Length: 495
Image (cartoon, rainbow, N blue to C red; front, side):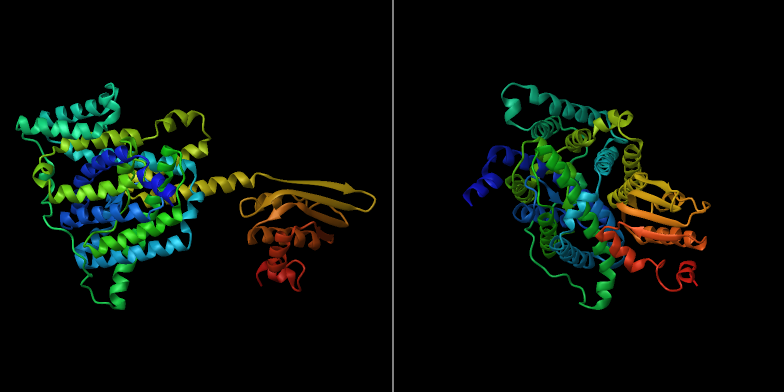
């Protein structure tokens, strides 16, 4: 118990606290921006980010990962808020949490094993591009001071770690934010600040129940949005967990993470916040700044609320250029540059999956669409590749007039046509033996192909015997095959 507590909470106190502060600073403008995207008051996003980060620190399955209000989730809320208002959004947030808890208990987190590395790489690259694109409005139509501040911020972020001793003790993104804020205040620069993003809340959040009628009509209104929010939230959280696993060389409990995200979203809804999920950008900021345990996530959420309520007069002075520099650093660090160099070495199918995932995500600004396209494309390429690993050989016993066909490999929808084409139906033989002892039948398409082969030989007067089916193949063949049943020809032809 004590060892677990130390490993997950107290093994990296200084690094976690400093990283949590950096993350909290980066969360504020994003939470406000996401609230504006969703069409709600900035405090809805800020309360959600505080609650989700604090709750997930205790119940999540991935130490060091940051969860809060996100842009991917905010985009899904726009129509609901516009047509039905904030109260229905809060109700949808509660239902989203329940669906995610159910997904955790159904162990749907384990479905991540079906997401290929190419899809994950495409997801990461697309997210890096979206993070960079999100900073462009802050760099468009502005004075030269903003460009100078942003360039200076990037210089601090990348050069400060080279400073002996101190460079390793303090996270460079935090130094960037503090120094640029001081410079902007001392020089009284006329540039956009956090305070220009929206009014910060000045009171603690309170528990409340959404003021909506508890009727079937309400459920039908919020259910489609809740399902979409639950799916996108879990997808982004599972992807982020995979990336943090790689960065820290540790493992995470994805099903616990599903349940944790659900509990956190229920808490957010009860505090007047919007639904959220894991944030890859902030998670990478946390890891790059030295955060490793649950304490970093708790610090980020707690310090966020403290800053909003206590340090608001200082907080509103932070220049957006400083935060833009941090997010550009995140974008550069998130993008998998190796994926560009590996294009010439990796298989064409893997490259296509990666590029399609990137293109769909960037074009739609919807992570779920991109991942779905990548997974489907990867599955098609895999099925096509496995379909080629099937061989049919034959041998003729001239004394008995028996032709024996030996099938080796996997027979399913992708290889069924090749299976059928491997038999010579024009040869005049008395008996045909189909040896399936080294083959496996996977689906009804494969069974239908076997029916077709057997019936064609029998139509030409040959005696056909199927041997060697393994137990699994025999089960599906016995259940769905028609070649040994009465009226087999009529059934095969669909009469």
